[in-house]
Image (cartoon, rainbow, N blue to C red):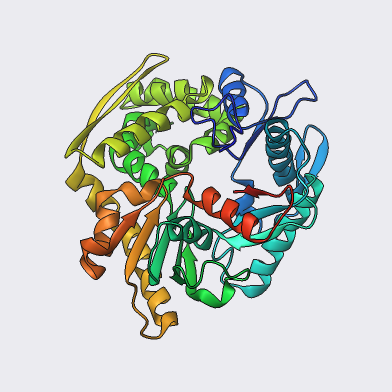
Length: 400
């Protein structure tokens, strides 16, 4: 598999983030964007632009006195990926197969808008005539390569922001077909992903360490710190919004009269020194540990902030029960669409599929013996590559 981001921890993966440093004309993408964003105070960081594709209210945003359409932002990421792929392949990419969520939106018009925007972004990035494949179907095609008999497979593809489910016929009698749409029995998705599970840990265990629930003196009356300020911690890239001068002036005043000045000090430092991403890396590490252990430590020591917290697996499972309920409801919808067709096997991929309580949703419903797993991060891309080969794309390539 091509190494698309030499600066990344896993060079096979390209993070769909952008950074526009102030005072320059540079636009950075991927791991390089994250590194520069964390090193600098100014600039505009853009994450998860693809999640806005179905939004009818998001048309453009102003960055460094220039208006960028949504598809232009997505195109920057895709263009950098194309350049890396072409450098590794030693030639131009002629066509590409792109993955897309099972459901961009439950509104058919918004779903169509999202795919149209993604197609435009691909064309702007130099991918003419893009072909689209639902991501759980792509994951299924990778799994199918190992099958020696036909199966009905429920594929669960768990991403950072969404989880998609597809029920599909797979196996030797199906794999040679050029068009696999007829093998799809049902497909659906939900806006729940790994980021939500990270945020649950921050919400329940760490917000108080940054002032949640504290009070400050306003004239002669004690007032609670506005909840919206600490709630910004539930999405690390939104912390930059707190750097606005009036907000920082307020926090410094509140710090003086706070009943928990250490926590407000932590919040001020986290904002001023751009440490939210580092905090979330510590949280994510703890989440991964809970996949194999009954207890995990959140260890964070940056900029004078000293945090050592323990999270038990039973606590984490209680905090994330509402998220799992939404995942389970999505599986219910899938099976309702399937009208009585039951899966022979369950194929799970994506980081969240490693969480024991998430796997238990499927084990309790279908039996642990039916569950199969793929590479948490590359199953979809491997399937897109197989789809590109089946399409007979000369010079084609998968694009996750």
